[in-house]
Length: 301
Image (cartoon, rainbow, N blue to C red; front, side, top):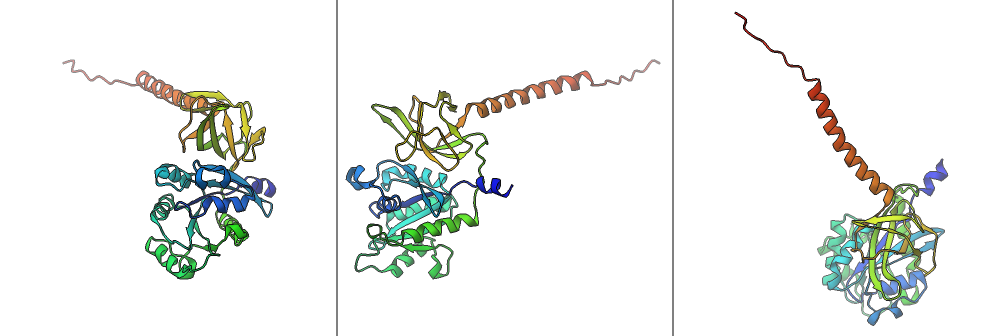
């Protein structure tokens, strides 16, 4: 029973947020030990990307959100899907406008945060100054008497990467989320685009249930059969369980980032429950009317 409960705890979903060019994707690149930055235009992330790594035999899912002000909505959605926010702040630059936006999104979503100070290997940095800037925005780090942990990292040198991952797992142990693989499907869209060869490509993260190849799923008025499931390594997989990011092929439309995908069975159940509820109301009304007793008093004098 204990093992079953342990298996039901899904991996943490972590989003990286911060100012443009503060090193979010480079940091994630160091975590994955694969080249992501080289595939992005100008080295700046164009789409939300979701990836899963394993650290100390435990999976962690990352959502890499764009740093551009134009993608504020997408970044906000990223905070909503995540369990933990990594606030990426360059030690050389400190708090910038998009850093402030990221802080607001994290605070509004009421998510625990970790501050990752990047570029700490460069000269002339003043972390105390940066921490004071964060304090003015409501982020009080542990060294200042607050509750927000910090990690100093240098992605090119691999410094602090394991410390950051350990901190993520520590935070997650304090408030793990249980998610049953056999529960009704709930998947959140974190990226969507049109591919000239594959058509509509929608990246989702499984929050509840299991998404399977050939499964019928629904978003709004479009019902499809899943044609392919592709993981973050580009491999076709038969199914995706809670916490797993996966590309879904089969939709005709590009789904809105942040929207929820359900399986067809739960949608039908929900609709039948609504119909049954309405029918019950009518039936009870008829029954009440049939049983309604009328007492007539008449004066016969």
